[in-house]
Amino acid sequence: MIFAVTACGRAPESSADSKSSADQLQPVQLPTKSEISPEKIANDIVDRVVRVSDVSGAGDETEWTFEAKEFRHVDILETKVTGSTLTLVIFLTTRNNPTGDEEQVQVSGKLHLEYERKAGKWVLTRIENLTFRYSVGVAT
Image (cartoon, rainbow, N blue to C red; front, side, top):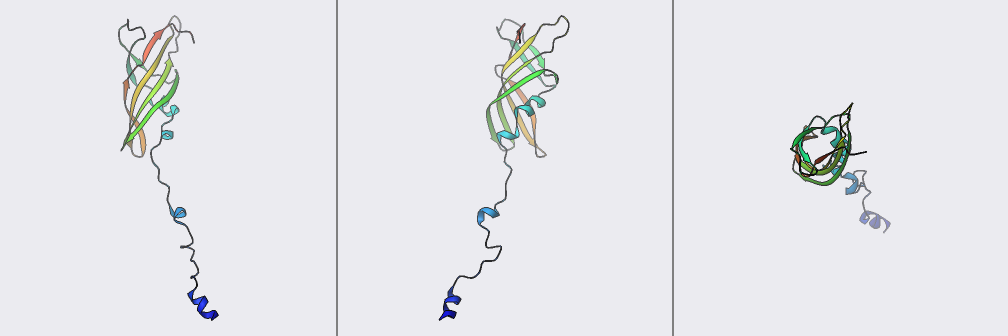
């Protein structure tokens, strides 16, 4: 009788069978907001050029080139991933580093950025000005 109970009992689990399916899952790296940080954006825009106009709308449009040594503060407002493309809307504040008799210039507003996944990394491919405007003589 004991033999029959033992024979009908559950077979011992092997080490491969003892792992739950959750333990066997492999992590997959998906593009997330954290892959594109404000710091990465601040570095990626260096030497890029954006057309800007005066806050009042009275001045002519000019070009702003982001310099490595200028102050930049980036806030990510929106993120959208579609395949190998990542689009962001950011709010950026930056200002020049005036020397001598130059005036202080501050530029702030929204920018639309496009990144493409190339060789496993996000690469900035396009910047579009949404509301990025400059003002002269702003005290900081």
